[in-house]
Amino acid sequence: MKITGVRTHILQAALSRHFASSRGWYDTRAAMLVEIETDQGLVGWGECYGPARITAAVVDNVAAWLIGKDPLPTEYLWQMIYAGLRDHGPKGVIIQGLSGIDIALWDIKGKYFGVPVQQLLGGAQRTELVAYATGLLRRQVDDPACYLAEEAAGYAAEGFSAVKLKVGFGEEEDMAATRLVREAIGPAVKLMIDANHAYDSVAAIRLGRAIEQYDVAWFEEPVPPEDIAGYQNVRTLLPIPVAGGECEFTRFGFRELFVSRALDIAQPDVCAAGGLSECKKIADMAEAFGVRYNPHVWGTGLAMAASLHLLAVLPSHTPSALRPIEPMLEFDRTEHPIREAILTEPIEHTRGVVRVPEGAGLGIEIDRKALARFSAQ
Image (cartoon, rainbow, N blue to C red; front, side, top):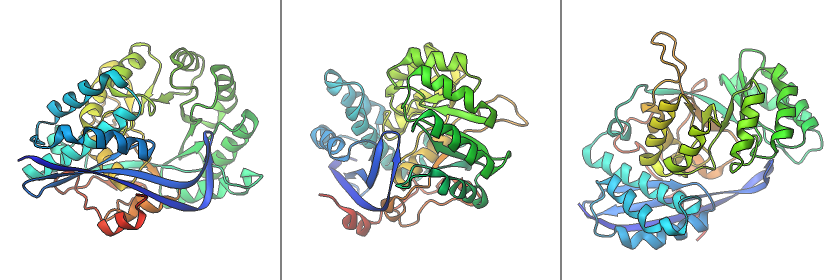
């Protein structure tokens, strides 16, 4: 079997209501999908996290390296692309582009052997994942109290046993928002906060100490990703577990985070950190260092499917045989018109639980009419 074509699909959709994280406002959602064709009619799909047109340029520029190659030796192809681009940046958009290619190759491999990707990754330890709801971003309303409590209570009513609140809008506002959400969801639902690296360690520690009374399950990206010493300070001085890693890349980047003991919870994105090949290696490293692993997921249903196959094979966080603590799926609840539309059968939750796709490869089918509808090319 040989690769005959590599295509990129840049997708974009306007939002009906703008929202913001600490990094800025969103008025559109975008996605970049990779399609790899073979001479046996098998097609693999992947997704790249990051700026769509730049990751598409990365994929388009290495496509010629793949034409004529056998798609099955995924490790060889990963190393070939990585080595060829090492001089130009072993982090960032180059690895994001490689991630989408790698996911598509695993999709082909699963289809070729007629098995789900998780079986090729080592076999499923679970067939379903508890999901946590990511939402609770800011709207263009002066007082977040007008909507945060209602939105959070809605997630709890849907059956989600954990929710994540976006912070990073100033310590006073963050304190008030955390209190509001905790009161809305009650004591039984887990609450995580995500600053999207809005603070330095001084401000992050001060905020953490002010909100620890609200039983925060983790503090995500409290400081910029390059500030490893800041992560260490926050982790040392707060009782709240520290999470991060969505802006880190490959086993080499995560090695530094693990050796420095900067994290309690690692959050690589399978569409950014190097694809399924690399994220499985990062997971093995995390287990060796005693670091929990909950992947970052902020993409379409394709990204969610790839993340589910990875999550299916991960060990539990704790070695307890009777009551282990399991990894969780991040389930984006913000508006994303492309997310469900590109799949012929969208990935949905049932009372906060999501099943791992069972079909060959990633176990999903892409709706080409949706690709045409949302095309930004």
